[in-house]
Length: 215
Image (cartoon, rainbow, N blue to C red; front, top):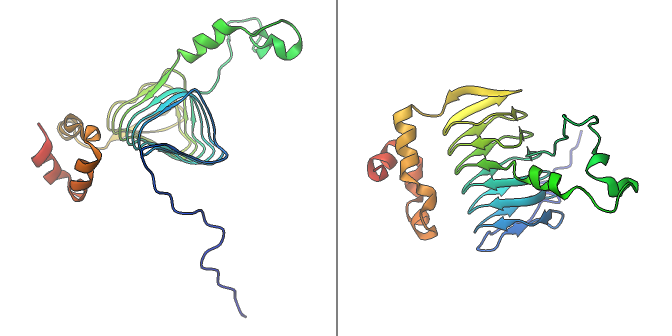
C-alpha cells in the first residue's frame, strides 16, 4: 500500500510580535487595552478588558470585564467572566434588561450592564489558564497560578497554586511557600525587554535564578 506524505498543509504563518498588539482577523474586540507583545487568537471575543505585556489568548476565547496580567498564558476556548442573569428577579430571562430586543421599551437597562461590568475578573502575572476553563465573575487569580483544563473557577486562587475541577479546588502548590514568595518578590515580569532577552537563559534554572535575583 502506498501513502501520501504531507509535510505541511495550510499552516498559519509564523508570527513576530511587537509593540502593537497582534489581533487575528476574525477576533472581535471592543473597548480594550493592550500592552506590548500581546496576541489574540482566531474567533476570540474581548469586551472591556486589559491584556498586559506579553500576555496572549488562543483561539475561541471569550473575555469580558477582565484585567489580564503580564505573561499570562490563556489556552483555547477559555471563558472569562461569563454574563450572568439576575436570579433574584421573578424571571431569569434577559428581556428584563434587554427590552429593546422585544419591542418592550426604548432602551436597555444601562444600570444593570454597568453593575455587571463592575464584577471584574483579575488574573495575575505569569499565569496559565488551561483549555476550556471558565473563570466566574469577580474572581482573582494570583501570580504564577495554574488553572486546569475544563475547570470552573468560582473563588479566588492563591499565587502559585494549581487548581482544577468543578468547582475548582487547590490540587497542590507549584513550589514550597518560601520559594514561591521569593520568586514573586523578584517581580521579573516588570523587567524591560532588553533585560528579559539578556537573562533569558537564566529562566531555566530556578535555584540559580533566585540566588541571583531574589531580594
